[in-house]
Length: 75
Image (tube, rainbow, N blue to C red; front, side, top):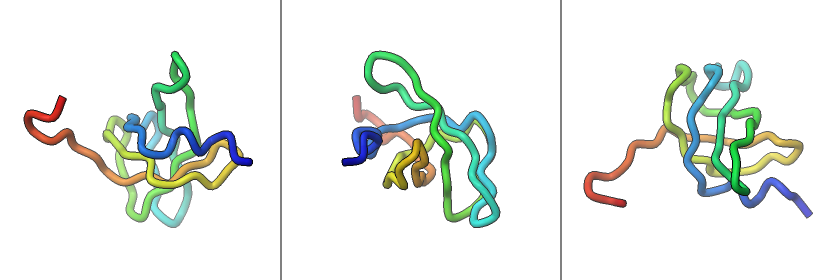
């Protein structure tokens, strides 16, 4: 069983840029009453500070992310 599956569907912020297929960055996610850092892979390079949605878990604290922006009025 993969303990990181609970992070899927959460929004986080990149603390280190992703490099697309050339390598992962790092994302900070609020989870389990605190924040945790995961290795983050994306299809295209994304700069630090980008809000991202976790869309998949690769296990071993590694996730797939896509850029995310809050929908207006959605709180």
